[in-house]
Length: 118
Image 1 (cartoon, rainbow, N blue to C red):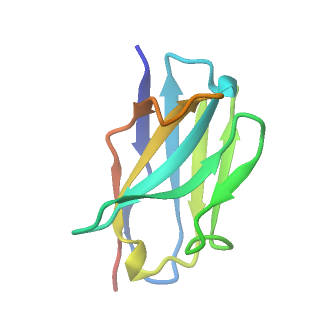
Image 2: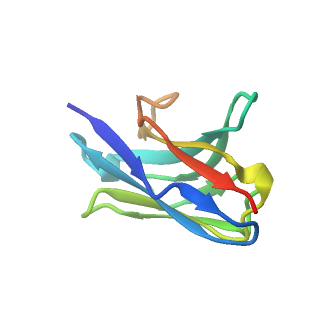
């Protein structure tokens, strides 16, 4: 059974940092791209960043330079380091796994809440 479990969310002041973790079980992580998505209040879910199975990374423009995605395939963990957080980053953050060479994300976590507020 495949599971993705996010953790690390919470309340942080503007300009602060949080590190989100996604622990994956039930699959061979080095054969998957893992992405982070978020759903802001009243908005559709949107792509944030991805760590590709081949080592590459992709970021949406609004977080590039502030967020960093990294992965440890041996520990089956993908981390999203978020710096210089802004109130607009407030959202539920989800991680998801996409099998290499497939279309779409196959597995999703339940999400973790990030709130940026003073």
